Length: 324
Image (cartoon, rainbow, N blue to C red; front, side, top):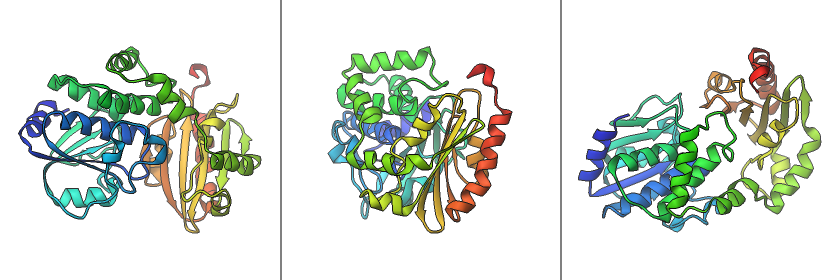
């Protein structure tokens, strides 16, 4: 990672833009907001932005209200992209930032990252983008409080599914310990980002779970536009079902197919240790990690399932049940 070069660029900057990927999860918001709060403490003028703003379930984080939902003006000495596997994933705010920033720092942990930007802080071995931010802050020797620690621990918790993925190491727990000592409250974070379900989420589970299919180690579920709209959700969402399905005994990989439009399907995939869904996502233009990946499929729900379900079964056949 270009820690020294990125640090020098940040230290010399007066104006800083920090963006993250569209449809942000806890690591996207946590890494962006934690870094933004840390950089503000350096006396920099910081703009943080993500298309659509911070989702409601992450607004408990310190200074979440400071994040902008769109950009139409401004120019920056440095732009930092967090947790975006490629430039396109930064959406409209990212496109504006790329066009109006002198230096771009690419901070990420996805193995499929194409290494865009002026300087790259990309660590595919890291559990999360939040971990990469933590490493960078430690490298710069910055002191910080709970306004930084809470978002970073949120990112760590989200991308490790509560410290349950095979990417978790002793260092992961040491980082969590440090962040808790700086004021992050683990119980509050897990309650908000892992356990909480809205009434609409519950209604969606009631409606779609009977459609789940469990076969030879593979769990799949399709969510239609009608399913989404009938429970009052504005965006296709599985409300945590892809992880729930993976928890079933004997299931090695899971996938939820979410119809976003008649000709567009968003696919979320998960795998237990010893199994790989990243290659499947990459094969249809997506990306992610070995155990957690996703893609946007151009076609109908039936077409997406016809193409990807056989690949899920192949992933199970190639996996190693002995190390689950």
